[in-house]
Amino acid sequence: MVILGETGTGKESVAHLIHSQSKRNDQPFVAIDCGSLSPELACSELFGHEKGAFTGAIQAKTGAFQEAHGGTLFLDEIGNLSYEVQTALLRVIQERVVRPVGSTRETRVDIRLIVASNEDLQQAVLHGRFRDDLYYRLNEFTVNVPPLRARKDDLPLFIATFKQTIEAELGRECGEITEEVYNAFYNYLWPGNIRELKNVMRRICLLAEDHAPITNAHLPEELLPRYEPGLPPGSDENLKNVSRQAEYKKILDVLQQVRFNKSEAARLMNIDRKTLYNKLHTLNIVL
Image 1: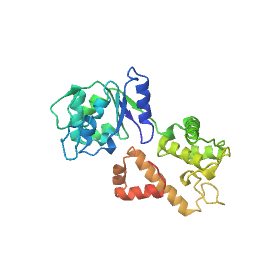
Image 2: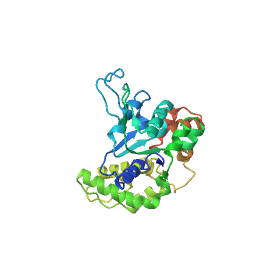
Image 3: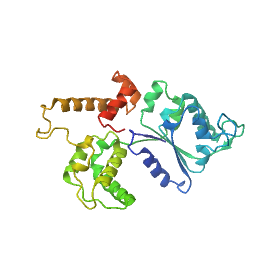
Image 4: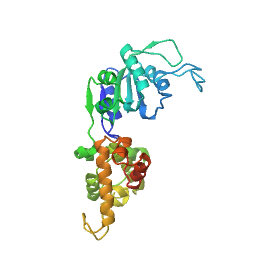
């Protein structure tokens, strides 16, 4: 099964839900972020290794496939795996056995495999970054998780849920969210999706006084109306702000076009990746 969606849309939560509603719900759920795995250590993390298999392997390690035996293995951002690791992964899926690095012993595994990507894997196949046979093997069923900007009717539910959860974690109760804050939320594009919303709600709950109304004063700058005091919304007189909005919109449009692949976005805008990161920071675009 493949779950597709932009960064922060809640792909792992969807995988958790699938696991919890399955006959495997009393077995392990193991999640691995493939984007954090180096090509050198990816096979070790996924399939395990024997003691002394490589420099630094001071003891044997059980891989994610064996840890998830009987349950569900969730591989997030699978498109980041190197071509060589993809080849090894395809063999495991086909044969249903894993061989730890440095071992000649194979162990049979029984798992439900769910993978996720913020990149269009079909495009990755066309550009030679992802094995076509692995893609077809995985793509028996696809779930598309829409970005938050396309499901703003769900905002009240997410806001209430995050507020309740964070208040419980902090052991305090904030006041009601005012209409101006809701308006700011509805007018914002949420490039970081649900993950960004949760971070904003945590900030609000940390800054707000107990039982006091939550206002725009508690919001981060990027959510505030983008005009200077005394100028009407949308005024073209504030050229600095207009320029900032244009750059913000252009970068976000390109990121959306490439499904938030920052390397590809930088290439399309003819800037290097470091420059893009600096602009994301300056414009408070959270991904």
